[in-house]
Length: 154
Image (tube, rainbow, N blue to C red; front, side, top):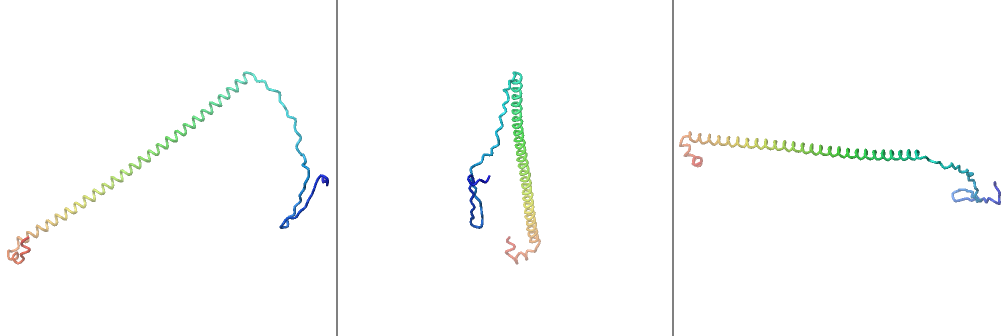
């Protein structure tokens, strides 16, 4: 196998101390032997076999169509469920927002009423005080009113 006439060998050293060997030779043919192709005799199909194959193909086609319809129905159902969930979420959000607004309004009204009652009570207390002062001035002798002309003019 190592004929010098057929094979040329060269050894070289590259930088970094790498040594390699280059072998030049004619390409060898090591292809596996070709097998004789076995040809089967042509099959003659009967009308019944052809009908059975057509029937099987039709069944496969119908089955694939049914699977596609099922997938479409599943997607449609998922979309409807998602739509229902979104609608429920929106309704819950609207309801909770409405309740919180009503609660805030009720609190606002209660606070407003409490402030008005407090103000009315304060005004009533002021009126009572004014009435007491008037009554005390009326009960005081006239000499006391003369001493303080500013107080009696009011």
